[in-house]
Length: 445
Image (cartoon, rainbow, N blue to C red; front, side, top):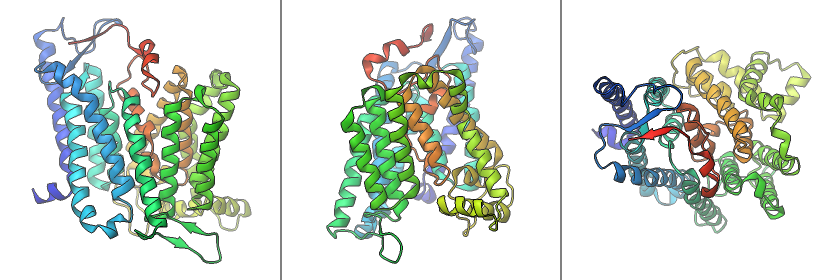
């Protein structure tokens, strides 16, 4: 009980696995009782039955509560990571010691209730959710990577949620948290991490490391773009993104985030000027393969690392030694099919290599195939802003692991469209644009 209070995610993850397992059994029982009314796989192509788990008691209230549970969990998680996780933890140690404990319980409990009691599933969706959660929970038991576990819980909880409304809450919380932390560091209220040596000046602006502040800026930029949409971007939007890129470059000097902010601006400019650039099938296929190609390139460069090769050495310097660190991790850590704890000296920041080492091949395949399918579905639905933001984070993954942080990479929420495979892929479009996205022939009871 004491360990659950202090570190609750393991217990809530177990409850989620158990709850979905019981939900599968309950749904199967309903199918056997009323095979024509509640088929497991639907009848033909037109009928798919979606049920709330464990009966229709308070069905309307549970359905109305679902968006609030997701929005509260996402906003609290954002506040916890962007504010409480700053160097305010040194200024207010009680906030870090006890506040994070309470916030962890609130986030996990909201997600658990949303997944088990406030979501409608059909038989296929329920089976898919259980299988994915079972594998990731097994790996989580071995590697204790909470970011991966939380990412999956958010993806599961995002089903049938108005994601734009949730993002409208999360973005102000994140932006205000970062602003308060940065201003507090400049005012001397809290400490900051600085480098004033012979290299470039670096300032973490109140966070524990420079690259985390860069990841916060990149995450806020992605949220803003998802809310604005590619078609509605104006000159002042690009000016704001350019200002964030300059701040990221001359403040924390976070190379990965700066390059990805520049890539985000360039990609959005291309999409804005040439709206049909993402429609051709070869383009969609190439972009869909991006996470798989990035994984192959990361693995190939790391395994082929040779410090005597001038081209590899130059590329390693451009990527802040990510290639040599990847080679060191692959050669010093044992191969683990179901995940393992990273060694104390393992500093593999490339997410493709990091999750291969600490999560194993099965979980790695689920992660990167999931993102590949997400890109395909986003491009197929014409959700250009979401697709560009997802691809930018997949590029960021070559140098950092924030691609699996649900508070930084909000496109993780959209993975619900891959796990549950609805007729139309969810996005962050406006409410009036969602009418055409509602699935036809879906029966909810």
